[in-house]
Image 1 (cartoon, one colour):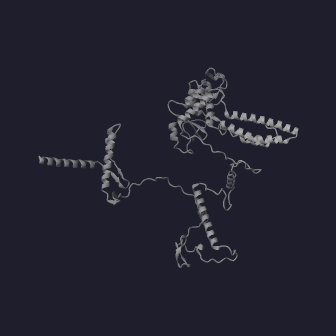
Image 2 (cartoon, chains in turn yellow, green):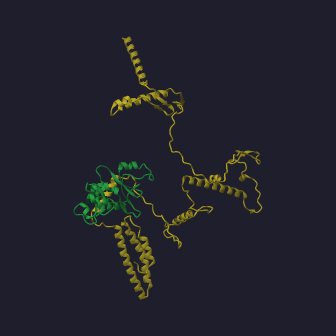
Image 3 (cartoon, chains in turn blue, red):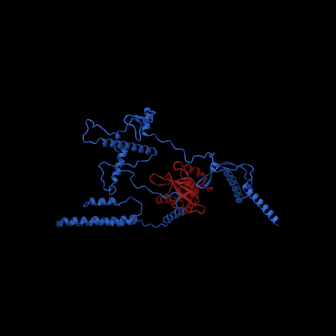
Length: 365
Length: 146
């Protein structure tokens, strides 16, 4: 009995082994090609099973995937291993498949100002040594950079030059000059970059430190300066022959290309319904403008009457008082009327307002 | 490429409605797919959603045309309906005019149609009504004003 048990156990163990081996060994007609650097396994066997499977080859696909992954893992287990922070890792070889470029080829950058000049003049870069003999410290020092050979800001004794102010600080002067050179270099570098990327520099209100600017740049700077007031340029006067700036309106915003199609359809159908209803729709803008125009005319008529009365009675104050009381209330009314206004049309308000304030006694159309 | 604004849609619909009237809502709201109007380089294109999604992959300066061109907006924002819209106007036309075979060639080369050349006309057509002109074989030729 025991013998039988032992035999049974052994047989079972053998069967288990065989099964395990079967699971990890996969038989393929053509060997797979492995690129372990990219963890890639290419299977060139013809997919006869898949073709035989029919419309939904889920089970066959899964079996295929399992087999190929098993083969890949088998290969990975054969790699040399090492220990990294208590984990056993396999050292992957170099990838053999060459992947295509991720991003497009960079386009050639425009030449910097120096490069253009050098090309024009035919100046080639001269090969220079990295180290220069420095007499002062008696050692070889860098040509430029940290602890360079001839650093004039680091001198301990500077003779005051003949024509200079004796109270001037020559050391500070040298440090200041260096700072200016550094700033100029940085500015030029940023400008070269901006030219390369066709971007604009965040400018000092459009003004150039040395004053050499083109007409367009000056014009732009002037426009920016005009708009940089508390009322955003509304009350800035123009020179007698200066023309209004073009294209300084608000940029239009359009609906996105793939907006909500259903909403678009609905709004179009609504528009059609309104068009077909054959009833004149109330145009709120025109109604409010008409109302305001009528009120203005009433006010004007009243004021004319008051001023005539004032002239006759000899009291200009009445007219003046009335005048002062007029515009603020007008402003209030106009602002109230704007509530119902719909988008279209340029604002009539500004023009009307200015006209009202300037021509107080004259007839208004 | 962008959708039309309210103003532009209104102008365009008013023009098209001269020929097909309230059947225009059949163009806007179709049972067999979502079609929409898109503006590209001042021209209005009537295009299905599927084609629009494909056309969005082409850069604007390289895209020539998509779907069917219905017409264009002129520099002063008036809408001019093109002949390419005829395929969509003809089935929904409210007032139709058929011309005789003899007058057909003359009409196609740009001459007026005389009363003798007129074959059939839908009844109750008023003067200056927008109509679609057909040949006697029911082939739409053009759209005009009577």
